[in-house]
Length: 137
Image (cartoon, rainbow, N blue to C red; front, top):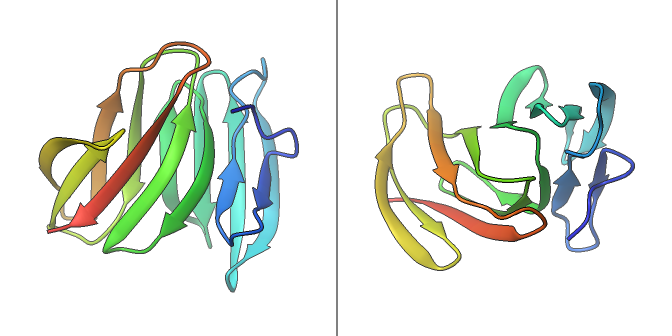
């Protein structure tokens, strides 16, 4: 997997790809139309943040590259690459239990907070990707 040079793009299968963790300074792209909404990406080596209509959708520390990002509040899946281990937060349904799978292995259940945010960490080696799937229980 490689970084998304154009910062955000829609793939042929309808999924989103975004982020470039190789950038030394924060770079943004706003007003990207996708699925009837306006998306904004901010990305560089320290953080990657995706917003939809001004609301956080995905955030990672350090920065990351995400491909095949698709789903809704009941199921979300994506592939992620970063220079090493990362923590990410996604927004889903508030106060709801979800199952987290990374590379097909279950990491158990995680409860979203009252704002709908789910946070998790993924162990990564530089240049390697992980496939993440989050499913409402």
